[in-house]
Image 1: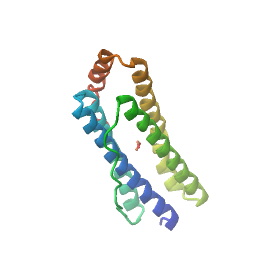
Image 2: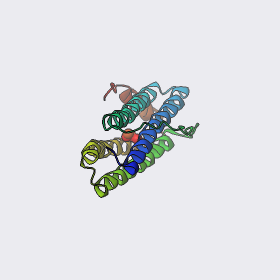
Image 3: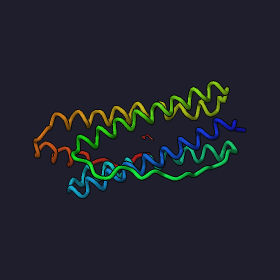
Image 4: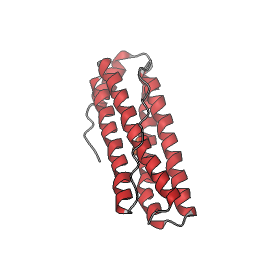
Length: 165
Ligand code: OFO
């Protein structure tokens, strides 16, 4: 049986993952409207991946006989000024998500909820990858600078991304 505090935080994290899905979909639409269909595809797959993260929380809550509390999902920002700004926001967002996962791990440890702690370890590892990937793309965009050809090449490369988990 989940403790009240743990259940509440798991629900909050589930909703944060749904928000991540929304945010990356908004970013995908931004790139689509700018005709960068490769980066748009990358972002759309990222959005789907975030949806699957939210569903991991949903399924775990049900499995642990917890209550699902689907709350209002905040509207994401619309309109960015550049690809660099989008990826800066992505890095910041992932750092924020990492912090909330760490807080959740701390709470599970405090509450001696070993099962939830083990469940969360997958997210701890995942966040290392999420931050590193976003940071790598941001670094490349910074290197490209104003070079349109460089950005089109990146668009082509990111468009090769296939659906993951
Ligand atoms: Fe769910 O990892 Fe990104 O936000």
